[in-house]
Amino acid sequence: MQAFTTHEGIMAPLDRGNVDTDAIIPKQYLKSIKRTGFGPHLFDDWRYRDPGGLDVDPATRRPNTDFLLNQPAYRDASILLARDNFGCGSSREHAVWALSDAGFRVVIAPSFADIFFNNCFKNGVLPIVLDHQNMDALFEVAARDAPAMARVDLLAQTVRAGGVEYPFEIDAYRRHNMLEGLDDIGLTLKHAETIRGYEQARRDAKPWLFREL
Image (cartoon, rainbow, N blue to C red):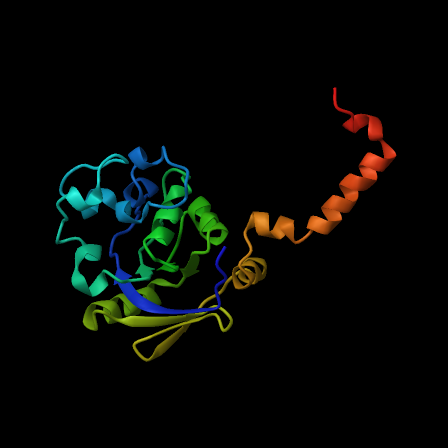
């Protein structure tokens, strides 16, 4: 997993509440478990004017020019601003894979669905919770100065945009893992030598358990 210390990028203001995971990545794309290739299908039903699927080349589809991410100011955005309860609905990890594959490193919202929130940390996307007043201020900056830049500093736990700094809270354990670029597998591999030692000691103590039939 890619480590996260600081990130500077364009903010994309998705001014909708209760955006569920089916809107983030529709169900027809869940057949693939490759973790990559989902970026062109992020917000698929809003992004295109005709239906898509794994066997449909996105380049052949008509884009919805009214949709936020199809507008020139936001095409290179890497920080998504959202409203309450972002990532609600089913627990599909594909939703975070799609955001990451599309280049988003940060999602900022007043609240997140729990499973989506946890999946972000496991896939190198930083979810930041800010109160409604601060979110309104960020949305205003993103709309006024489009394309508007923001700088996210995980070490200092701040978001800076429009000349204003917004502090945020984050669990210390999750913060450490993001800074180190550690997902669940990475955390386990840090103890690889201890695991190998345990397995060898077990083989030595009870060799009959490991005999091939």
